[in-house]
Length: 86
Image (cartoon, rainbow, N blue to C red):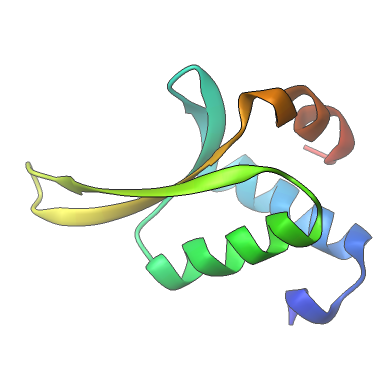
């Protein structure tokens, strides 16, 4: 399980996740996902790595489906982009 691994493995996991499900979110960067449990687990990992962020969710009216997001605080964006092996 990723949560029990060292910080380097956690950073690599987050980097890979960002490569596939991350990107620009408004004027910052973050993740979008369909699964709330994944959002919560990703938030825990980011907390372990001292990355300030916030969680959000919204209803896509076109598909009547709930989506979950994590947005990295803008003050942390540069550090995130440089310290994670993206």
